[in-house]
Image: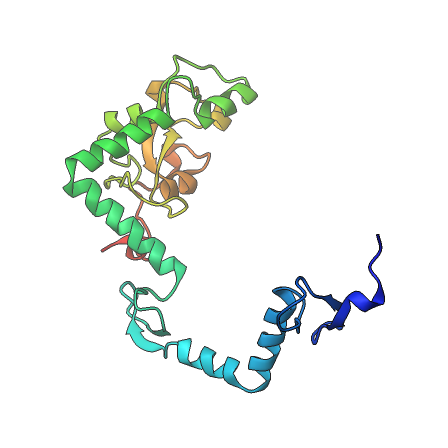
Length: 228
């Protein structure tokens, strides 16, 4: 049965939709249920300035701080912010991981366990894939961490220690390098690979050791970005 016009008790003060009483007694409704009443309250509070006053009271005034990594000054309203940028925060995390690695034997074993699991026997290295594409001879499968532990985590190109906790794309993360490059007829075998920094590995490229001036020297800027 359709409702008649007599059932309408008024119109919504916000959207002008017809209103109908739910009961015969009581004060007639002024707004549509909930949504229109909330929208009308928002417009009324914003029009009389109370909205901006509440926002201003909720905002915290910025405080001048000094970055814990680069020392640069910056302003922040967050009491927990200690660094001026995401890059400085990443450097902080890398330093913390490095310090934990060398000071905590349990954490060091945890990191080495990560290397062992990531470079498991069932996971071929990138060098194995490249050797397969080039048709180069390959020996028994090996793990990258076995190469690092065999060489004592020392880069054979610059003769400096390799930090297992060095962040990715920092230039100091550990990599496996072919002494005789695959592009120069080298083989992918355990005897032809050595541990190296990513920067040193990229600098050597496809050259032989006789074509380099060894030992290599890591750039000062690279060391300063991750040093304590």
